[in-house]
Image 1 (cartoon, rainbow, N blue to C red):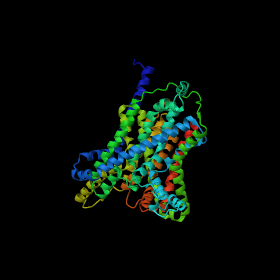
Image 2 (image 1 turned 180 degrees about the vertical axis):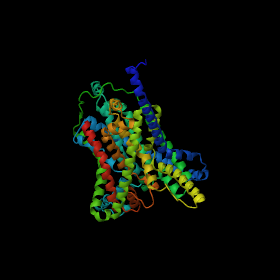
Image 3 (image 1 turned 60 degrees about the vertical axis):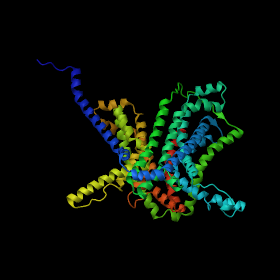
Image 4 (image 1 turned 90 degrees about the horizontal axis):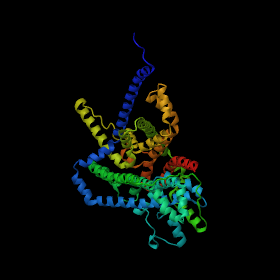
Length: 563
């Protein structure tokens, strides 16, 4: 007589097929994540491969003429912006976090507002504001009776220091945000102990708070410097030759694709150096916080001249980085409504909304796949694949553009040559100069934002929910669709907003890759500003700033809730 299976045996027999199915699906998910990582890394691999192609003649010409200025200006720009964002970001973060003075609660969120305005918009606005016929110099001539430039000296904003100032004013919030978060997370007991040992506020800041916040500060400065190297419009408008302007000029002005690729590869050296510096700083940090903020920290109360100095320290960057340029743009727009909001504006706005919405949707989908794949198997290989897919945010848009056009051009020419020989028909350009190429560039550049927002939200979902869904017979895909996505809607929305807004502001990659006769608001502003038609550009620039306010407002709201 055949024995019936024991309960344990029956359970094992019943569950083993499900486990093998789940294993196959997880393996399929790994392959999907690896394919996404490979697809996103194509531009970087293309640029790196260009180093090994001989372009010695053109490269020698660049080395003898402009390469030294590219290196010098890029390093000078990085040094100036690095010092500026560190001083403003760390100083204001300490003041609003640890000190109490008039308006400190307002400055907590208001100091983030300059994030909404791209540096190139500030450059255009201040050029109009400070030039010979602008309101500042016109007022000075009226007050002092000066007639021309021979009667007085006024600094030229279109210079290296002007570019450093514009980039500093819009990028210091990166350092401010991370430094303030680090100050908030520091142990109250540690800071109170420094007081009990006789440290005044300045000594507590220098000897205790600043060393503890160093990794966060270095990360914020690294992000600001990466954005500095990515900038094209500001330095081009101010006549400062950097690698980004050189790449654009070499590709389109000289028609030398290989030389442009090698310049892009040279620029990647700076980017990888910044990434290594940031990783090294976090790896070297040996500071531990044994106590969180378990008690209320008694803020330093500032009075008299100290309170005035604190207000000015917070008000000056806010005024220069947002209030003045925003006010100038608003005044220009209101005085010229018919000229700025014409049919062309709405066409460009539609183009911007189209590509921004498309890129945001695809980025959310890919970011969800990457984040969920990492949740299923947090192995070293999966972490490497997801980090590879997210590395594009550190790569300048001009480098991404060069890395995309080269392989797409090779693909189009190969298909066209085959079609001519086999079918006697020319296919032309299939992918180059299309919405596909432009969206691909945006995905490479901003997929990290989507992956980061979704991944952080996914970590808040308890693993027990996955186990419960599996016990009810749901597959990995079914668990994602029925359990995780409904719980992730805030993270998905945040990811979509971040990508949407950054695509709206993106200029360097858009200028190179956009389809013929397809201009976005950012390109429209750039073209008008290049023709010195700043009044007509004001409406489009103001629209970009208003859209950029959305994530800043959301971030400020979260900061207020946390306080």
